[in-house]
Image (tube, rainbow, N blue to C red; front, side):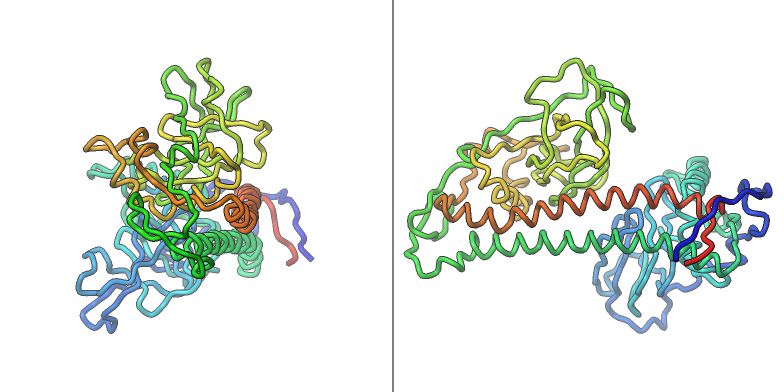
Length: 438
């Protein structure tokens, strides 16, 4: 049984109101920060390295296996099971993660504070340290720092006050919140598998031509490769129409929904290399035309290179609207190009072409020097793709379209789970909502 109750009796503390039977502790009394660093006796020649850009709001996007001798000088923090990684640089960007399972050679950047719990449930401490309350406090300290970039020092973290419920309640709170995190993580992993499955089918069919090995092959000059006889080779502009979105000029942008606004799809919604990222803005404009609108499931790609996360040019995504969004269309920015296939069966095929050859496309069809733009006209006329007969496209579509539909459903569920989790988090870790039974 899961049983909650709303707390009614509080006492005032330096971190605000907490239940009367809770305590307040300093981080340095319940945990150790940066307890273990690589030294001359470190036994591993290869390290599994986690840098700041590899961590994003509880998700470790990448771990790099690199030789210790060629590792960056900041690869120093030894990481163990149940450690907490919290970036000391630009805390507002929320580069933090909880380490469920570390390898013996896992190492983090010195840009992280590595927090090792001693007298507190590690997951409870992680959830408290990732509240808006702590993030905003550390951000304010970091922005007051006189150095070249916003950062806070370890002593600020060590002297931070933390709510401290009875140990059994710490475990109950951590278990409830971890349930959401585990379910979100499982759905993200499922989406990775679904996309990799679609990519594997695409590679098998349209790069290695495995299902068509018994057919006659002919040489294509445009593609500089052999392909099954009877397939067409066309400029991509003959497979789809391309349009760019709305310029920001004369428009009102909002970080949250306001009455009459449309969801606004921007570069922030595209992952480097491909895939959709649910970071939404909203827009009102008197300059909207039909070509500025898109619908959920539309194929888009980034037509500008530079963002905070790095190179995006040519990275594709399928549009996903927020679950609570009440409209059937949104608006996209002029940094985004919408791809409108001439047949529905070719949409996933085009997405996987962009996904597979994104770096080649970006390096070949760009304009500018400092910041690249997309040479759309050249791309439409001179980027050739193999176009199989319609029955093959229909078979391929029937295989991969359900995979992408499941990804969309999972992403919607992730957004809903995250919204509930983020609503519960401050209520639970500050004791306003008590977990009595689990």
